[in-house]
Image (cartoon, rainbow, N blue to C red; front, side, top):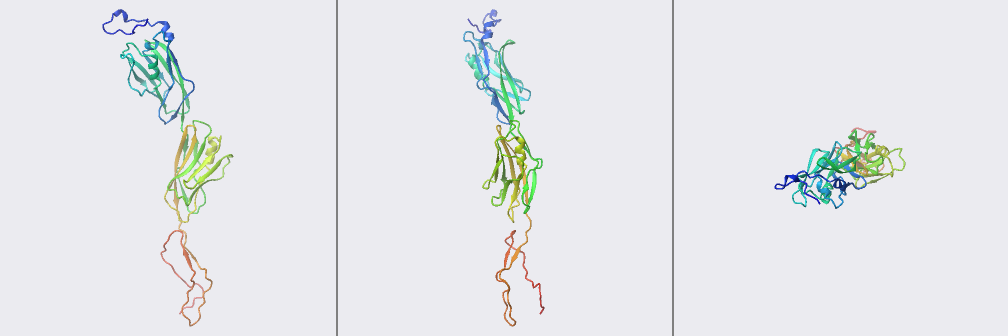
Length: 347
């Protein structure tokens, strides 16, 4: 039969040294679920193993002999137990968490009396969460059950961490001048991914001060085959896609993205251009500042009515009733003059 493993006030001192039977030691098992837990750096913490298993043979109260369980990850990782203290079904045993370092966590029973069941330990261990700032590393998170210094059961769960892809713009601001044709925006943009050697897609969008009537994005010359692109004028987005293309190939294509404004009187508000890449971990992006400089275009005067004829002694005649004046930069002019520049006769 099974006896309580701790002496409560009033019991005989002879019960204080309860020896754990070897059969009970063999009866408890920890089982990690199959597969790998994935964590994305910068994201919310994830459960180390939401299907972690704790069992005993049903004949010995093996799990009740657990004093504490240690969970250990790698330096730089963070383990947490978000549930607070838990009172087991015995009504006298409380599981709580403590930690010596961020990557080491202990779930322990405070002043053990009757212990906690396998199901209770299982439910608590499934709540342990993981996060890290280190991307691209797979580590084994170790679980170990202990009674009076003796290891009762162990298991390990592999957790893989991946970071979002990154886009770096060594030159974060550029200037476009009116009538200058196409401007390559980021010839030195750098793209990286710790999740995969390939990317799913990329996009470049004018997210700030976009002028739908005049602004445009396109791809210039690049050496990557199998890449397609399309520009959505309503959103100012150039979408780039290519199945199975590597990070370096997408980088080469992004370096060829061009901007053009077709207006003779462009808005000079600084555009914000966002470069984004997507992989299995998510989306990474960076913003480019694009200044637009307008050029003062000369006004235009057109004469379209041929030659005017004046007869001596006659009254004044209209020189040109079809003259037209335009200025692409402004709806108003400062002044205007009419001069006789050839064969002028004074008087």
